[in-house]
Length: 546
Image (cartoon, rainbow, N blue to C red; front, side, top):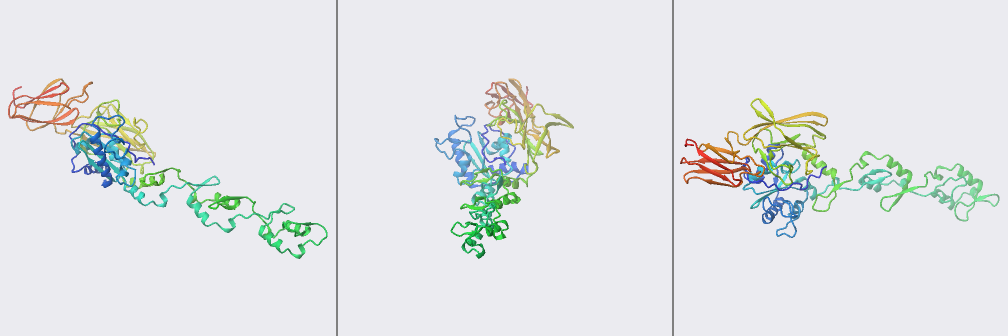
């Protein structure tokens, strides 16, 4: 089992965007994404929400959007800071009363509302995969003045930590002469040792021919030897009893040559010490037990364990893996994003911390596919393609970059997760077709889905020059796109408008290169929009002289 339930994602610092998702609360927003992906919904948890709120308050106090103080990340707190509630998400969750440490955290900063925060997080591949986690079923959320904190957990591990079933607990195996034996079987063996397994040594004095005699037999013999066995005073004799009793040599030799069953000591005389005490058992008996261990007695675990609970409980990784498989078994074979049929997908991805594209300031919206480990053991991706749909023609989107577990610069993708980044932004208001080919458990499979980007039916104005003029109609929503420059990757972040009082222009940031605008003009007068980058756009109400 992969130790997925750790905080492995960091803050995203995108600026506000107009989001396609609208919901009443942050929990609803997360669940709306999961519902579209075919995943189970997350239920609110008070302890997780308390931990999230404490962290949101801390971030509002100590961190500015887009700025990272030395030694600080969006997920780590410093003990010396005011409002400290725990260094890591796991510690903060336990401190708030959550029963285990297996949590995932997403943080966003700098968004004006929950819708835009969610859209930004879902455009960031690592944060997206956290929200689309296959095992999580609980969620705590908090919104600060500048931050949104999401903390995901699991009720099955919470229940495990409250009441630990015996099958969950890690127990070291017992060496059964080179074969690992479960401790439960070993303890059962010790509790029910047969009497004939307990070691008894032979009579200490051996026969003249080297044969060993049973100690109990000889004790009885030596206490009351038969009349014919007692030495009569003539000839040879032996003193095998260790006292003054003398036995006739011919009689004792005959006993040693053909001893009755009760007199013969058959074991080798060797023993093993096992169980509490320890107890001595015949080596032959123990060797037979080890050579014939039933399958249920053989220790087949990896021997690894984790301590997910607030208390120090060692839990078998195999048991945790089984909990994963139970959750995964009811989920789809694959989870894709954007989901099939999605509309209003934002065309671009800008930045995430940690950054999956550290060499680029902006790229197209990333696509992802997750293969369910419970339904796909071995996955070999052979192709991941994206096409723009132009009528009946599919136009391949190039260039692209495929990220997987081996080339992910932050080593956060599992071997069942893949992300495709178009290296240039997608087109506004366009239709796309995604296609994945893979060998899944040795069988070639193909997966296809479709989505469209934001701006369908919305006129696009592209201002490529330093100064540009456009004619616009009253009451119509337009997208105004200013392509990034080499020295100005974000082109629409600071704006100023100039117009007559009777005219009105509404501007909303869609992404750092795009505005959504609407003009309501009563007078034929130029409406000017100036940008901090030095670029200028003039808007002429339709029907007015140019």
